Image (cartoon, rainbow, N blue to C red):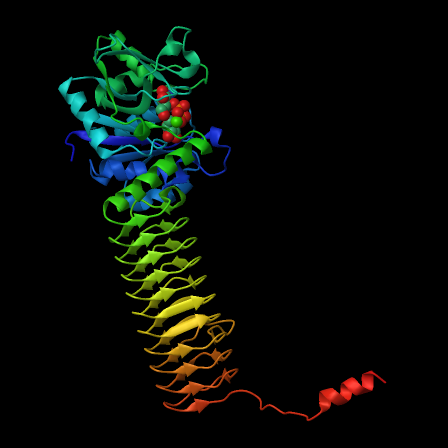
Length: 469
Ligand code: UD1
Ligand code: CA
């Protein structure tokens, strides 16, 4: 934790260059909003109540999306530039009882790959150099669009100014070192200069970056520190740039898992979120998505085109092609799919089989039970060793309420049966194929819930003969 520091995260901008209705900082990469990545990095350094998130464009939507993180919010009702955003922070401290910190670390809500270690390095440098402002920089292959950081001497730490892309002179155009939009300020040095910023520039905005030259003019020390990797300070101003960051983040997740003994074929085709955990010797085939808080044990296999969201999968599980899991729990040795759809609160027991085109929702399936073809199982308690025939379904919904179907151990449900809930099939009972079951079936009984078949001898032959006359 950093003593004497608070963190401001600028997240009020609209993101005009995205051409999207959604506020930029709520666009997702690696399965999570840009802003939440930045907040997560910040929270590893200071407690949430010392993180000030500046919101403005679609403020309520942004606030609602990140509120659970426990950070504070500073409203910037009109977005008149990054300098104006910091004017709002200054006004906030003037009015609130929060203690104005000695140093203020400023992060950008649209620079999401930033690592905690890098932010820490900026703060360390700031203290060591006794600077008024410390700027995190990088040298990307293409600096176009970024502000450039001009150093006093090429090999020195001191900076003379930050110049925005549109204001670069012919000679400055060769400057390759970019401003990451991440800074550390001695708070009073920053606050004392915010009122002197002007909008006399290409965008007609208050630029926070102008503070650098103002400090230098007053004889204050402004220094720069270069990030170890360029990728982590890349901003996302367009969808294409954002997808570039998404790819970097997903690739990092796949590499982390492979380093832990997971086999991922064609990792470039898989979409894996940062928090996903997978045990060793599990195999992930091409074109698989593992999302959110998903956990998978060891020696399992997830075949191509499966999408697993927020689910727990045990060890030795086979997820065949094209399965969709959302909020499901699957115990060791189970076999799913191909094309099974496990919806929230599906709990599949050890060694159970949920097969082709089977949909489950809020069910518990006991050990070794099988539903292999074309079933819908919703709001059901299914015991061990149950066999559910092709096409059988639970009718859980009466148009108003959901009702429970209980299928006890060892039950055999014949194909194409409809089980109208609430209903219980007792232990070891049988349901004849094609039955519509509306009453409980006692233990060990056979239930036939269908009209009796009538055969009319020669009917078809006589009809054919009549027609050919
Ligand atoms: C800014 C820097 C530029 C730097 C780049 C790094 C300025 C003037 N320029 O440019 O030197 O290279 O970041 O990514 O600061 N925001 C607000 N309120 C506003 C305007 C913006 O909160 O009124 C927020 C945005 O939501 C965004 C961040 O500040 O998260 C940066 O704003 P943006 O417009 O993206 O600045 P850049 O043009 O990228
Ligand atoms: Ca930006």
